[in-house]
Amino acid sequence: MLKETSISHLIRPEDLQHHGTLFAGRMAEWFVETCFVAASRLVGRPEDVVCVQIHGISFKKPANNGDIVDIKARIALLGPTSITVCGQAFVNDDEITAVSGMITFVTVDKEGKPYEHGLILPQEYIAQNREIHQEALKIRGQK
Ligand SMILES: CC(C)(COP(=O)(O)OP(=O)(O)OC[C@H]1O[C@@H](n2cnc3c(N)ncnc32)[C@H](O)[C@@H]1OP(=O)(O)O)[C@@H](O)C(=O)NCCC(=O)NCCS
Image 1 (cartoon, helix red, strand yellow):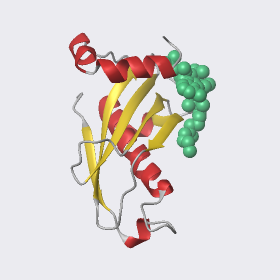
Image 2 (image 1 turned 180 degrees about the horizontal axis):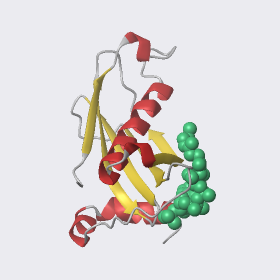
Image 3 (image 1 turned 90 degrees about the vertical axis):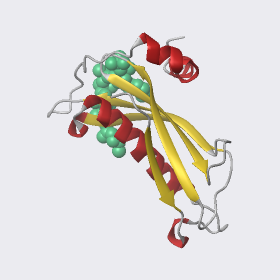
Image 4 (image 1 turned 45 degrees about the horizontal axis):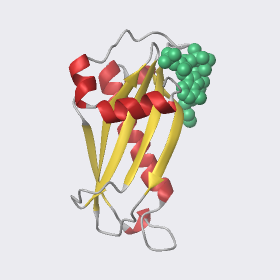
């Protein structure tokens, strides 16, 4: 249930911008999708999950045509109705993060009204993911 979500993409010519490197808009789309999948897997009902805020996506390294991008997403923080997910992207198995950011989703009913998902993060998981948990508390204004 709390496994990391990982989605890989091969960069093709149609993914590039005028500089010849990966277009930020394409990367952002892939990034949000991976974080959405992580939140949806946890909730178990993708139709109930909506994005309320992209807290920021930092692009630290360019990627090129033919590169393979692995986007990994982990749950960072849970509120009563919210799920904050941390995403990180790596290019060609490089250990240095190329792209990173946090996104918050909310569980909503059929009328689009937030409802409490009733999920909690196990203490062991929080201990194993302390860095992103602390970062999420900070950006959500809880620390
Ligand atoms: C998501 C949505 C239902 C939230 O409605 P709301 O009236 O703000 O809901 P609430 O005030 O009850 O807040 C619900 C949760 O969202 C969080 N939240 C609200 N606005 C937020 C923001 N800007 N950033 C981060 N979290 C936010 C609240 O902190 C709360 O989390 P909690 O359960 O951990 O306390 C509403 O804003 C919406 O429908 N947005 C459009 C969603 C959408 O279409 N997404 C796709 C974008 S293209």
